[in-house]
Each structure stands twice: as structure tokens, then as C-alpha cells.
Length: 296
Ligand SMILES: [Zn+2]
Image (tube, rainbow, N blue to C red; front, side):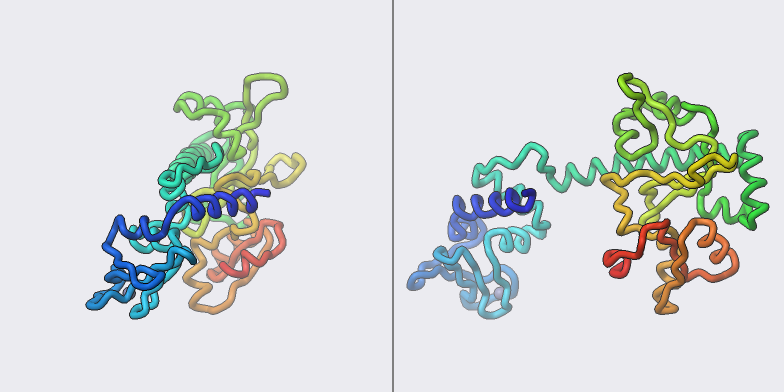
């Protein structure tokens, strides 16, 4: 359904816009038989090597091989992405994009805002582990399992206090919309009430990062024997479980060098290996290895 409407938008834009008029806005074209020709802007052209066919809706350079449709021309000429070309040409063709269709710039600013909230939360949990009374117990738990203070700092491990709303209050005090914090799973909305509570309580926190080291979500392990033993952030706009491997931001270079990866299941397994000097490792966090993982 989604693909259909996407395709129909593209089709409608192509139907409404003339490729000759579009390209003529950037360079001059001359009629030659049933096509148009011009100086190719994509290489140092002496003779008019660029041919444009209105009938086919395509351009092609016989010298450098550049070619494509109106979207291809816009992407190449203006050095923009395909979605950006769609937004730009939809505007010119007066084709309304669905309300929920987001421009790449808007998409990016939303993701940036979510990453900022996660980063703030990560620092808060880390501080709680190192400095709070409850955190001491969690630190003891970690050190008993061979996770040193050095590792705690290196992987920004944290602790979520056992109260129901420590993080909720902090986020509210920082003017972060709690509905947004809910989208990335940090807080949960109470049924039939306009109030929220912390998802992670009384748990050791493992920040989950993408390959660039940005926090996409969190894993929390109980230290009080509460079930379930682990809870994780839900899927969100910035956390796609099948394309994230825990630790990859730290182990990628080692994996490239060794040309293979040691795949383990959980945070603790990964950290133990890393501490033991086995650095070409990743953890799948319980999801089975997917095609997207393999491509990473
Ligand atoms: Zn060319």
C-alpha cells in the first residue's frame, strides 16, 4: 500500500513535468529531430553530447554516460538525494505529498532530537550508577561478574533508580515532551491518565549504540531477581533491532582486520570477551542474525 502511493506520486510528477522544460531551466537545449541536445553539465563537454527525449522522459550523455529521468537529473545536477528530488519536483509539479510524508531535512531533525534525549538519559543513568547509593550495589554486582570500573566508563553503563519516576521528572524538568520520550520507550503512559512512569527501574543499564556510537536504545538487567531478567527499548524511529548489533561501534575495525566476528548473545558475554582482549565481537541481543546484520 505504502509502495503503491509512493510509486503513484512519482508517476504523477513525471506525467506533469516536461523533462525538456526542467533541463532548459539549467542549460540551453536545441531541437534535433524528435529529440533535444545540449552541452552536458556532467563532464567538460565541447560538443553538445547531451540528448533529451521528451517522449521517453529521459536524458543521456553520449560522451560521459550520464543519464536518467527528471529525478536523476535533479539528483545529479543539484547533488541531492532521491527523496529530496521528490520533494523538490512535487512542489514544482504541484503534486501534494501525503501529510505524513516527511522531507529528509525534517526526518533528520526528528532523529537528532530523539538521539539528544537518549544521550541525556544515558548520562543520567551513568551518573546514577557512579554516584548514587543504589548505584553502589549495582557497581558491586558488576564487579562481581568481572566488569571493571574501566569497562563501566568505556561502555557508559548506567543504573536506573528503582523509583517510578526519577527519569520522568528529569525529562519533564528539561522540557522534553514526555510523548516523545514514550516514542523511544524511555517512559510509559499510564492507562487512561495523562501521566507517565519510567520504563527502566532498579536495573543496570546498557546503552545500545549504532555504528556511529549514537545511543539508539537501552537494555536493562535486573539486580533484584525481578522478572524478566532483561528488558529492552522497543523498536522506534531510531532503533531498528534487525540492523543493530551491540558493540559494533567499538569492534568494527577489529572485525575488518580479523575478517570475521565472534557473535554472542548478550551484553555481559560481549563485555567479558572485550575485557579479555577479544575485540572482534558483537552481541545480537537475542534477535536471530538477519540478512541486514550480515550486510553490516
Ligand atoms: Zn556528459
